[in-house]
Image 1 (tube, one colour):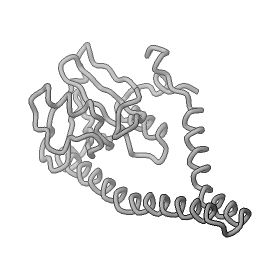
Image 2: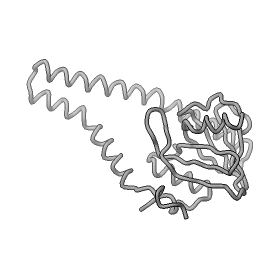
Image 3: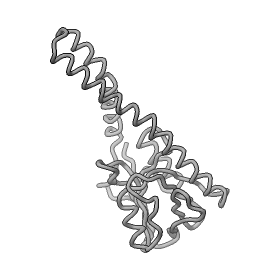
Image 4: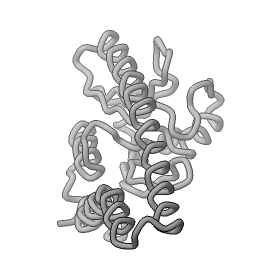
Length: 204
């Protein structure tokens, strides 16, 4: 059984959804506020600030998200081409992923914080693949007595996100799963693929 201090509260995920809904209605709220205050300089300034901010966010989502999805799909396809029976978990590298790779002396290209990576889960081992790879960068031994899977908050860009740390006593990897729309659902799917009991890691 995993230690209680890393059990996760699904209420946190629901709070995140509430925040997203709140942010989604912000432009409408700004418009209504501007109308209520009248066409003075302050109201117009607030409206312009909100509109520009959301336009930049929308452009970022439109340009970046499809590209990252495509990269994860390409990596997954390469894993399945090499091992058709493998379970694949795609996601993003955390800062720790690059640190682990450096400690092993493997190629660091494409392993920056937030880069697309994938795990090929096979009987007895887990392969770590990055963009452009034709073979795994490194491998974890699932049969090792020190093998461990932990669900933690991992550094991603300028924030922390729910992710998975896997270690076998010799090597390790950190992955922020991205195979589902919700963060909790993505982690649960990753735990299932890893053959780990999600109830040991995800609280009710």
